[in-house]
Length: 387
Ligand SMILES: [Zn+2]
Image (cartoon, rainbow, N blue to C red):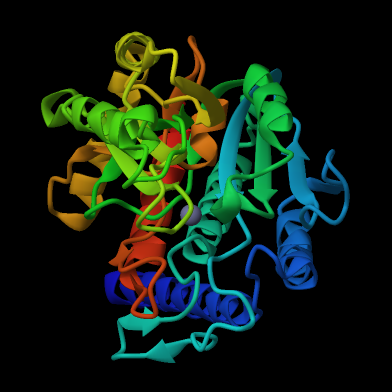
């Protein structure tokens, strides 16, 4: 009898594993570079019936900035006893456009599969689907209905900054008490925070003059900017998780004999919290206070700070991973920005990196450990049951 039970359990697990890797292959076979709007929608269309099978109501929302900006956002809802929601965050796009040579999945061995978006984020979608399925059937056995409403959102353009959706994310966040990001696992652990970024464009204005005849009459904008950059570079503080980086400089007339009359720099800053962002902004203001300098902020994403209210839930996830996979992972603070940044707010429990394990995302070596599809789904199922 016992051996029959084990055999049944084993067969069921194997069936899950097959279904999951088959679905993953289907999703990875469709090109969904962020700019390939039809491809992204085709991926979402594949997922739609899989969510409906689980009882979700699925709808598509057009990009508020216009239907040419991105494919629509997939929104799925399953009403629970409380309208307060658990929100699952994923994305359907990848960094691999149709022009990329990396288009197909392939098996390295029984366990390792490479392919565009295989962990980022198509594997994450498969983990969520399996976890939701197991969570709901577990409730069914107990004749229970979900305690909280479940929202699933699948972004069409995460890889290019989710342009157009920030407001929608804020609204979804307001309806939620907890948000769970299915981005790939980070070094087999999870993500407890993400830096925010602020991009500055800095312009120095000097005065052109003949570099030989009228040197003293010129004011060299390249020099002015270079001196500022020297000071700005010193603001990086790895201990504080704060970095600044000049990504680009340009200036002058591309001539030797004219004193440079203008110069421009692009500055990327990454901050772990709003407080540190404000502090950095003040320091930059002080450095750039100069009649020859103007600057503006061209892009800003708020940090997903490590919040104390998330800590017990993070610990719970780490415990579950240890129990399921036999190894204690770590919660990391990531330098990369993701959709979760736009959900983060005071009072919201938030965890990211709940997707599968693998490596080398955004490169043609991107791979997934297929075993993690079921192990991370199990972790998420157990986590949901405990809420
Ligand atoms: Zn991603």
